[in-house]
Amino acid sequence: YRLAYDLTTNSPDLEEHIRQYDLSLKAPALAEFKRFYSPSDIQNEYRLLLERWSLLESELKGNRPENYINQLSNYVKQIDNFVLSIQRFSEMKLRVAAGISIISFLLTIGLVFYIIHFSRRQIVEPLNRMVHASHYIQTGRFDHPPLDVELPNELGVLATAFTSMSTDLAK
Image (cartoon, rainbow, N blue to C red; front, side, top):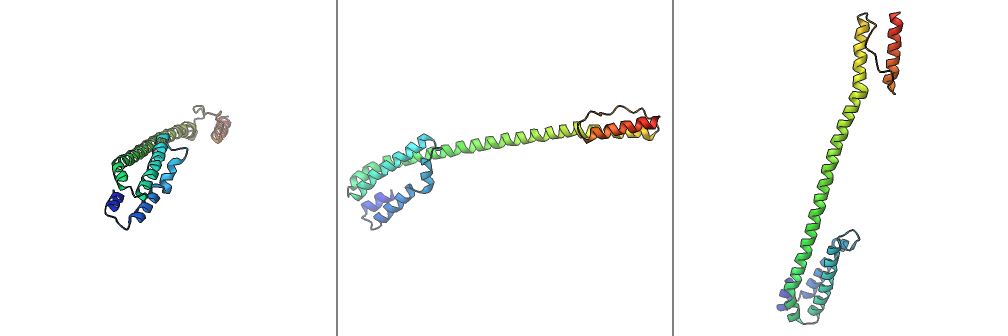
């Protein structure tokens, strides 16, 4: 609308404003919509917008102000639709990012619970059984509950040594 105002008032800034609008329409941020990962409808709308601007710019520079002014409201609607498409795409990307964040959070919580469960089953429970067996030996009873000597780690080695020691002490 600024260009229409400049046109109808014979503003000396018309050429500069045309140049500024042209630069804003071809800005690097908007040029990103030409990339393969942009939705095709946005790419198409942007291409049509550029084509329409090319025609309108020739109307402006060709001293046919009535043609430009007659097409202006439809062009502004086209811009509004393009901006709305960009907004919807941005909202969709935000929803996807939020969904990924929620899934990542839930997976992290699940992993933490699994690690806690694994640690309790493979570390804490065998250590508790060894502490319980050591209390038996401390009181002179060498018939402690059996320890898990089949563990494939250092606790299995320790349980084997502890069981062997208590058997030797019982003799």
